[in-house]
Image (cartoon, rainbow over all chains, first blue to last red):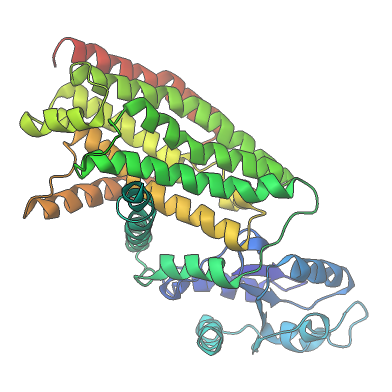
Length: 124
Length: 310
């Protein structure tokens, strides 16, 4: 699992970090946070993607070993949220790279993130 | 020939050590999880990880750097680890073959995986991998001397016997070497050397995940990364086994003693895991002075004590 933070308000970041704490413990499902995109199976994208982030996100997606699953987290990642009509907004994540799962919420609860990822793992 | 291939590929070699090492890796992660009040991964997780990388994931070659060396380094690492596993485990399971159990051969074979990591990381052309590779090199320089001193101490205690068969026999007929003062000191020094060889936490500056994004292995994906994982599983099994052979009278495989052998192995791995979980990562400078000054000093004290029969 690799975590890409766009122009986020950090609320989703905190909720993602929550998933790794002893209380929620994603390692139960064998999921670890990795430091290099080359080791990742799942790419978590949160925050609104602005024009500068867009190139980075595409570059990162191209560098990831396929097959890779992309999860858009939070209202901003899924639709753009309150930034959807902003000047610097470059489109929600699924306009830029293919997305396998959406986890809406502002921010989504850690339970929702875990449920989304487990559903994704069971389906693929 | 067929017997040698069997030794290398199946029983004490590749397959056996990989499976045992996979379970030990799960044990390591599970203990880590319970130290942190978590639940930990499922039993077969190391094997899922390995087969996912081997069969499903794409292998990406870095544009800069040398693809051939980059791809061959993990292969060398696996072969080095598997050959070392055969040569350590043949004497431990008391299988007689052409090999006499020379300690220095085993010592050199055990360094091959670390050197392959260095070569592979420098061939990847990534600056963070270069940092990781140079740290790994410094770490090798610092701990190899200490490890050699530990082996020298063992040879002295076993009345100048170089081969692993005799060392295990002497311990099984008399008392294990760890039952003396010098043996305890050698065991402590040996545990730290193994910790550094495995790249576990106080000495994981070569792959420092939070700092240089798993450094030496940053560019690896797919099959080469699977081979690196396999090497790590094998090393996690054979290095504790080697320490047990040197100091704790090896494995005795008659009847109930198998349980005792497994307990010894799990005990050593548990010790390594607990050291890993209760220490922060130190700087490479500190690691060098830790081994070069303190651990060498302890090892020399142990050798002197062993010389006078303590």
